[in-house]
Image (cartoon, rainbow, N blue to C red):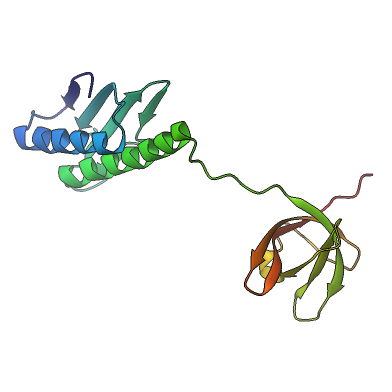
Length: 179
């Protein structure tokens, strides 16, 4: 890390063992991203809780170029080490997403295709024809956001993919009629 790790204990005594665990986990974050500029960790015991035991809350905030990545909520647990683990795991996942975005590795979704339902069968499957004459198989599991059932001739949007059995339509949605 370019800047020193900052660990703050609130409403509780400082613990060398907990701080050592935090330092270990913060160092592991560098395996996922070597551009970390700072890391602030707050460990506290929140006041007045309806919970019987003493809870520890941990919040981790990491700065990288152009972004601040934080555990999105306070991670609370009766075991301070579990709270530390959960908070760092949340930040690690968000840090991995940041690295993928900056590398351009973010998954690109295929554009939606347009077509019409050309055949339907009683057991909930059918076929959609796109503008190029290709037919895509679909079933009820792939139809989303439709209050009523599809009928032959319904204009639809869908994600098309090639499967072992041929062309298949996923995430099929009906076009709303303008009116």
